[in-house]
Image (cartoon, rainbow, N blue to C red; front, top):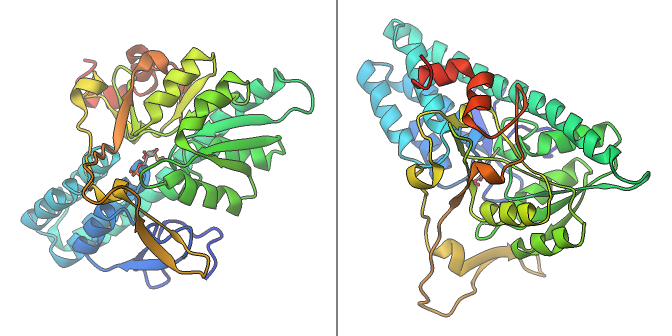
Length: 368
Ligand code: MRU
């Protein structure tokens, strides 16, 4: 099977749920079936699927798989509890679980399984539409930046982690404007942060940009500041796992350092996000967002392809070295030039977020 246009989560011809196993990329492309709640939970925990919107979609299908086995109130509550503890940071997970429960709760138990798959399908399609809208708004921003450059110059975008099609159902968030710019014929080039420790940039973003024919260069994570000082970055676009009511942005560890460097060099720093990533219940991201700490082996070891074509894992620190592995950090709103949402590019502050998404703000009690 080729990878082209295969969504990272989809239903096969028989209606079964399958995912691209992202732990094998970029060396091996393989689909993996999710046969039940536990498969879905394991896929999120093991990061076979990852990225906030895709975690949300997978959780929705996890609820549907659970409903197929036991659609009672207790069964659904148990599934919610299991899926909610898979990963702590991406708020799309909780959003999707609550959407599913709210949808299924009023229905007769016998009707719930079919309704659950239909709602999960709808959540997946909604994500595609949202990301396409983010792309259209982001494209307008990229056109404006390009218009300010000398004729014939290319636009250099820097991105961190993978907020691409592999992190969503399609298009990606940070990559949607890039793909639309490429499709529109704009001369665009992407600096891809490798994104240690799991290398989502080097392994996933580089893979999918190549798939779409977008010019790109993989850089070590500590290169961005240097590039910005030399005028080689026109704009930074990243994704987010959770954005607070005040516009603070939680994203992959290292994002904050890029925002600081962008601020120091007058480079615009945009965050692309679908509305389910906004957490109106949280205001101060640094104080209130739980940051996932992951296993030491992600830092102490690296996996890659050897010269003879084997995928191998090697240790890169002294045996027994102590390591720390914080998976996310928070970029304060004051460092964010704008939020690229499905409803337009808005300021990273409470007034703009509430004005753009009043229904979500109201549901969280932020407005009366
Ligand atoms: O740990 P991951 O790979 O799930 O982290 C992903 C990110 O940090 C993405 O930038 C974020 O989820 C936005 S994805 C559209």
